[in-house]
Image (cartoon, rainbow, N blue to C red; front, side, top):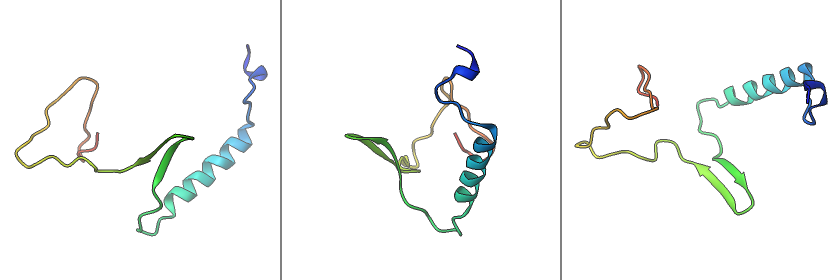
Length: 75
């Protein structure tokens, strides 16, 4: 199947318009937390809760396979 026959074909212009709108929406928080991020559909809906796991001070996370941490401590 070539790209022209793809069922979910989107024009480059439409893709750029949607990407620009998504960028504007993401950057328009005014420093306030936005609504909860809910993923999934039907019975399988999940809310993203950032920083939900805060270990006690005596626990130090070590290295593991396939995980990297940047200079700001983000995984």
